[in-house]
Image (cartoon, rainbow, N blue to C red; front, side, top):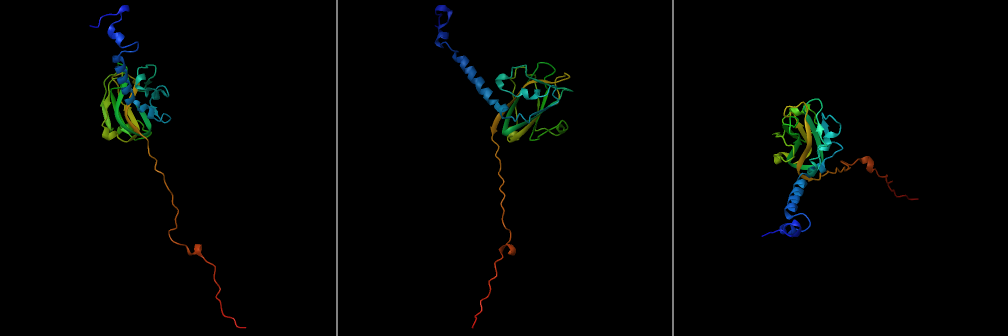
Length: 220
């Protein structure tokens, strides 16, 4: 029997000590592991990241952040002229992309479709006419819990990711609070180019020797 100790605190709670209970610690550990899994935002080359059709310049970069900070609704991107948004996301190495998470409002501004393209730097809206590597129909996700797994075989060697949101759930503009990227990162290997200078064939002019005067016997 657990019973109640003096002061109204159960003996079970006292057994956990003054800190958090084991259930809380387990939940925190699970949350920490999940947060680490969505750590590819740390591998984005933010100097070259682009968001096309963003209403406020630079706001598109704000949605790529830690999973634990996804609930910060002060940071978001909203489209400008229409509902489309296009992100060009360069990485600092090679990425194996395993999943994407998209968090928006629980209304018409939430994106309804997501199209992924790989290794097309400086992609424009004109380029989105081509076939995507993978397309997703999205559900409204105001809390950032839904994961969209990718076809890993198609995203095993990604150095640049383009994310196109062509439509939403009926609003004039699209609003996104958080985009999570899940996967593995490896450092890009740079191939050093060695220039060898060699002589294809000897040039007689380069190997000219001084003439040797013939010696003739001289009899005085």
